[in-house]
Length: 157
Length: 154
Image (cartoon, rainbow over all chains, first blue to last red):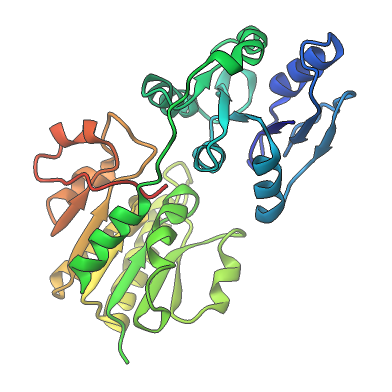
């Protein structure tokens, strides 16, 4: 199963949902798709969508997924990385009215450079990334938060 | 028992990161201060949660809101008199942190995870005041010479 998530902000991300719908219709994507669509207005024909999901449901779907395709929000990306999923990120871009600015590119770039994720810089790259995902090696992300939290706790003691 | 540690941040990602720490601390000795909006209002049910007015540099009332937040910050510092202040930014936390330092608090600043190569304005300013300054990306160690990289809040 492929799980798609576009976060909770008030901007649409129709560009991503349309492309995935097209890839399903043209049979490039053969596995089932489930998507969390937020404020997007596009209604996909080929897969099931939810506007918003609770944290628990979100966890369930990501756990079940073989691949997570997400916008460039840190919360969504790290959710998937911590569950050791393959991740394709499509950054939201200001020019398409998908966010107030292009900050999703910065975090996408660094995580791609460090080998944790794959990024579709152009929506047309998505097809190749999906078809080749099995052959793409992504590093396992080890959450560091315990280390920093303990460090601070020791200081505050 | 008094309040030992005050946690303060604006909303959104800053608060998510701050809560990674706050949620592991004993609530009865900790206070949480953040901006009030529809995503944080439910936190008001908890003990020792205080609010600042949502601050936004582009708002025409910015100066007025900022002054209110300066006054609120002083009130909260005097109310809690924290031994430690832990913050992840952004701008609205500055008055509280500076008042805290004046009244003897120990300031711990964690630069936002979302910034990889460039420091935040708040980070640059509070770097001068902080007793402990953490970055979440090693790249920033070249900008903040005395900062430490000890892991991340995600």
